[in-house]
Image (tube, rainbow, N blue to C red; front, side, top):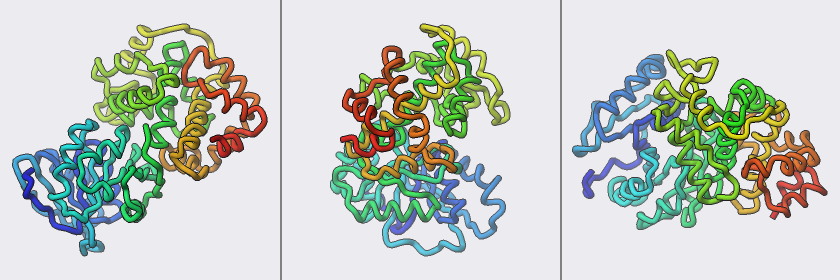
Length: 411
């Protein structure tokens, strides 16, 4: 892309037509929002459109697909325009979902202001990088925010809107309006490691892998996840997210909170075997014809055995505690850190971002567990796993209050 290049104003631009970019494109098409899909090659852009033509585009004859447009040697785009959404808006909305590398994103945004116009709203779908760190490449960081979609995008009704240090209220409002336009509920949070959802999710996924290496079966982990209120096993969720993405998110979490994550060595072993997840048909599970295998893959079992440590028998209730309580600890600490100032955001994060049971409150789940059980689990399991580490003052508060009271009053 050249520095002089200008894109037409008032459009929606999705930058990156990889796995996540295509899922975001599908959300726009399902909401009948006209958009451009842009990537570095015509082949990648055509592949994204071909996927849609099989499904959404084939059943709605009001879509017009423009011819491929080449802006430069490494910039191709196709415009999808719906008959009910023809008028350009006053400001362009740019949503980037390119590779999760800080230098690459900074390079993109260093040129984005001139390419898309100085009134465009610029959004990154990053799940791992600090918004304020990416924004350092911008002359005007007030119009930059995070817009983090959750996988699988078509099954997750929330979108995390991340406010950087310099993000303006008008930018946040524009992001929220766009999220609602594509039928997503905006979850506005402050910038920080993992924001809300990944901050809570990282220890949950990592703990599942550690449990595998300690002798817990995949079936028991799945039972515990369902009892907790999650729609699928954390092992299957890891495959949906992608094990490389999980690795990157876990590294961000560990770097920020090294005393609260005992990183599973198994994850690096999976990546070395190129078992990246559902998108390539090979992760913790196999995915013949796109369907999850009943059992873990043979390679996964082999890797878990290789890294087996301190094997023991766990009751299902133990596994529930080891998966769920670290998420509550992170929620309490995120509240203390000011990532959000509304306790209801945790329910939205879990239900809208991770598919938690919409018929019950995530916060109320812990009141049903009870403070005594949670304190006993923290005492019992913290010597074994860093995810159960919690500040002494948090434990003291839990001794005299319910879990929901403790979470909301902890500071």
